[in-house]
Figure 1 (cartoon, rainbow, N blue to C red):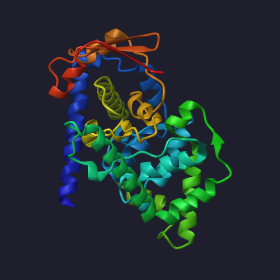
Figure 2 (figure 1 turned 60 degrees about the horizontal axis):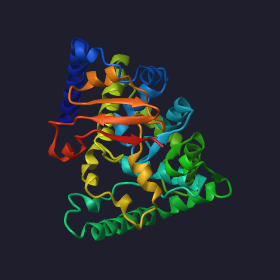
Figure 3 (figure 1 turned 135 degrees about the horizontal axis):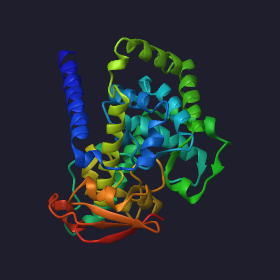
Length: 342
């Protein structure tokens, strides 16, 4: 317990230090990471609460959670409110992988012809696709991913079966974009909530969704104000830094995975010929926020972000320039190239 408290204090001190550095650094303070998007997000009532709960319960940045094709629907604030209410549930076991997969599954069941749920496969960690057998190995890792997903569903089969029964008959046809991305809507959270409460009534869980949520809020009532991010200033910094980080990942050609899932850069099983070809789009065409569309940027704002990175956007196309001096695996992206958002 003492170790965790020291860790939290260290994180708080580090965040305060970075916020102070950001304010005092004239080069960074003039950065317009995306003023329109940032301000719109800062106006969301439940954004700070969502950050606090994700850091406290899952010890992760929300931007690491909204990966693997998972996006927010249009009613962002209400969705965040409803999402916060299921975060403390025991079914997730403190794992964002479990939570993300359940959300993806609910979306997959609601939208006809949707791509299958995505997610990390622990068996893949540390593997590579080097050598002539790369394509064969890629298919092998795809098979492992399928087995891993099947094992997860088997382990929690009553819950997924209940969710399937709840959604059955209410599924709708989606647009090509809705079929490729996992766009979270309120109905998905309502279906999951109903599923968890039904399973509680059947004795699968110790408490209802409401009881889990209220118990969590009561347990944090004394120190809620001290949970990070504490102030709106810290929240803005966290948003700006996270968007900047995801933008760099996208420009480097990396897939829509979390920071800790780096090994998927080398084993992209969604490129397997056996995999749904739409998943390639899902994993490689993503924005730097939780929404679908690209962010409009001025050349000046991006040049100020990183002296080794410059880009401009025109007509929906993004040009990436100069990654010289970064890590070796990024050198191949050192030339100017174009990527379309469509």
